[in-house]
Image 1: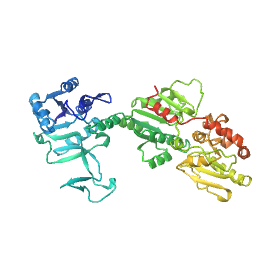
Image 2: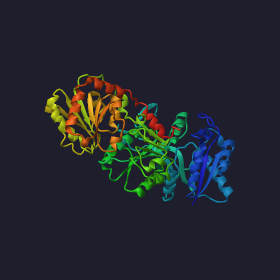
Image 3: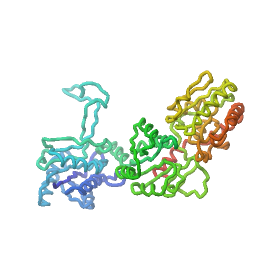
Image 4: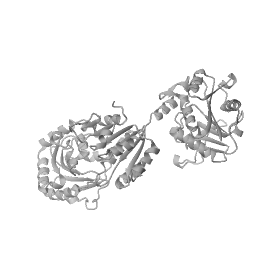
Length: 546
C-alpha cells in the first residue's frame, strides 16, 4: 500500500504573518507535521511532499529530505481551497515518482499538537477498513445557535447538559485520509466517510494568536508519572502529597501509579477521578512507563533502591524522590526531604527542611485566629491511617480528662483509612466529638487552642495555623522528623506507644493551664513561612531550580 502525505503550506498568512515558519516552542511550525509524517513512514511505504509557494518553507522541507511541490500563482491565492492544491501535488508526485498512490493523506502545517501515535492509529484503522475517507475531528457537544432567514434559531432539540448532548464533530484540520480514486480537483471526500476523534489537546488548529498561545502551552506540557503508595503500614501521606502536587500541575499531564497492595490509596484516588494505573511488580511497572513515556517520574514511596531508579532511567529524563534515604536517592535528579534536616554527607541534589514542605492549598487561604488565653478546644489528629491507633489511646485519655477539664471540648479528626472508626464515636456528655474524613482540616485547626498529633506532615499544617501541639510519634522513622521540637512550637513526647498515659494527661493539663507557654509556642510556629514551599517544590520537580 503506497501512501502520499501532502503538507500544504503557503508563505503568506494575514492573521499570523509568516506563521508556518515561525518558531513554535523551539522549532518552525511546519516541522511538527513533517516530523509526524516521517514517523508514519517508519511503519508504511510513504512519500512526503510539501506544497508551497515560499522559498523559506521550501528550504525547511529540503533540509528534512522531503519533496517540494512548487505551486503556481493560481494555487496560491487567498480564495483557493485545499482540494485543487492536494490534487496538483498528487499528479506531480505521481509523474515524478513514476508510480500511482493508493492513499493520499492531507496534513495541515497548522496542527502542531497532533501526536505521531494518533496519526499512526488512524492510518492503521483506515487501512483495515473499506472506508473512502477518514477525517480527524474533535467532539464538542455544546448548545449552539445559527442564523436562518435573518433569524437566530437553535441548533438543538432539547436543552441538556453537555455530557448528555449528541456528538458534535468539528474538523480539527490535523489530517484527511482518502483513497486515491476519491481525490479530484474539487474534492477529497468519498462516499464511505468516518471521523477519527482525537483528544482536544491534539486538535488545536492555528488560525489566531489565541490558537498559537494554546498550542504552545500544550506543547510545553510534560508527562509526569507519580509513583506513590497508600497502605496501613505507611499511611496516606504519600497519596495526599502527590494529589496536592497534581492539582497544582494543571498545565501538565499526570498519571498516578500505585501498588496492588495499596488498597486504601487506590480507594482515595478513585474518589478524585485522577488517572491511575495499578502494578504488581517491576515488569508491569515497566510496561506502564514504556507506554506513557514520562518526562518526569516522582517517587513518593519512602526509600528506593538502585535497581528501581536504573529501571526508571530507561524511560525518563528526570526523577524526583520524596523522603528517600535509600541507595536509590543517590541516583535521582532531586530528593526532597522536608521532614529531615541537617543530615551528614548530604549531596547537593537533596533539598531538606521545612522550606520544602508542599503545603496544601487550604492552608494558603485559611488564616490563624487570634490567640486565646483560655483553652476551650483541643484537637486530636493522627493522620489518614493512624497505624499505631494513637487515636484509641487518646480517646480513653480524654474520657479521663473530661472531669478534670469540664470546659474543654475534645475534637477527634479520624482519617480516610482509619480502621477503628466504629469504636471512636462522639460522646457529647464527655465533650468528645468525632469528625471522620474531614474535607477541610484547616477549619478545625482554626478553632483549636492546642492539638495532640503524630510526627508526620500535620506538624507543618499546625505550625502554619499557629496551633501549639503535643507530639506522639507513630514509629521510629517518624520520630526522626526533627521539625516537631520546642524550637518550632511543639512538645515532643517521643514514641506514642511507649509514652505512658499519666505523662500524656499531665502534659495536656499543664499546657492548657499555661497560656504564656502556648503563646510562645504559637509565635515560634508562625515565624515559619510555608507559602513559598509549593513553588520551590514545583520548580524542583520541573527542573527549573537549576
